[in-house]
Image (cartoon, rainbow, N blue to C red):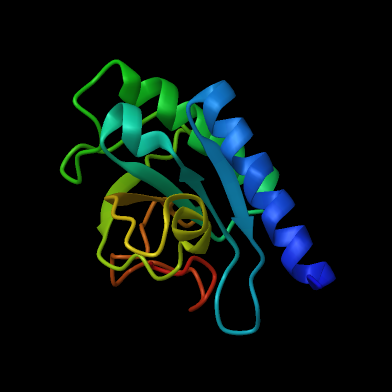
Length: 150
């Protein structure tokens, strides 16, 4: 007899696979805790573009909109580049930056959909503090844990 949680995970993974087949990718949200900020990431995008995207520290609807904007932006380019700041992704004239993620551990849905040996390159979109400083800058005023660096 299967357990209700196992059934839920099987059904949810099937829904994610369906979204990927319909749209080319799905966006998975992960809620934060006392130590880590929430984050949202793509699953399936690597089949078309060779990489996946993640945004941390923002509510899922906001992070999802940023991800959709980045997917559209990068579709017409060579993809994420850590040396090129991104303008006009978030309001207020702030610039974002891309940072390569080195661990696949935070991306459980990637493994659920593609198996435990799944591999993909993730790029994290970094958003600035109110002064325009990114979390990789020592002058950044965001409190620790506001935007986890994955």
